[in-house]
Length: 459
Image (cartoon, rainbow, N blue to C red; front, top):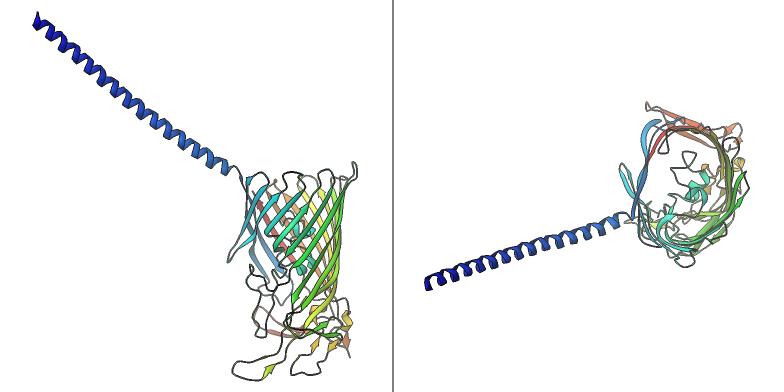
């Protein structure tokens, strides 16, 4: 009997041990599974967080490949293929009212940053926004995207006043909620894209992110939109530029080539202009638009003071600053041809010097009293006005692919003649190396016509 009891006790102990062991094993497996689930949950949470960030990034861009043929015999080679633009735009909206924009340019041999700025939007009234970084200057044709523009390049007056289109600075925008009014005011470095050379010919303004001087320039632009019922809409407005360059010379010459004033090194050389604009959009005959802008004011270029050559005490004559009164305008006519084609015409005119006419070029002259310290200056090709008739035909394969044929007919202001001899001629070299003396005669029209065939892809 005692033996049976001992056997039973041993059996019960074995069962209890096995049960406890199985329970421990189950608990370990449950813990392991729970750890795996917790780890998976953490990874899913991390992935969800990363995905949430990715959904805040928008990527777009476009590429323009083209073939160009130049009719001017002095341009060699006179035809070639090129990649005009290749840009990718990254927009990151990190939170409501905050946006970062970065646009690199991938043109071969010239990797650069076109846009890099942050935008802070007013969360309360939804009216104001503050921009800071590198962005488009406040002007209609400048801000109108190169991927949407109806002619291959911007008008002459805009390319002259705003080289590179962008500037580095800060901008405040005002857009009232229920009023079709838009106002911009920007504080900019001002010398972006400008070449400012010293006596040795070195560009003092090579580093884009570093300001050339202490002067900051102000730009303002205001526009208003009118709805014209079923006919369409009319936008109109004005913009102004108020800035200065730092003088590197002791004289400033005016564009009449007779007025010269004394200045000090570091004085402000003013650059001020204003312009008016309009854009008319009409829903008639399949859709058309007429757009234009006029700009006039005073521009400037910087000279330099006399500098002695290395190892000598003799100074070369300096060059005076130059202030030129100018005017320019452009006028577009755009007509849709069905749903896939579009025709565009633009006339643009730019006169870099309104103080003298073509017959005065090479005749109007500033003669320095002391030629050892300041060079004389004669009016020349840079004072001639230019008018351009631009014609373009576009075919849209879809919203993302466009092929364009653009032809620019360029007319130069003609100079006068003395005893039947042109006052302004230039030599040029042919493709075979033959030099043509006085081959370009500016008493006649110099052929600068240009044909451009371009394919554009967007995404």
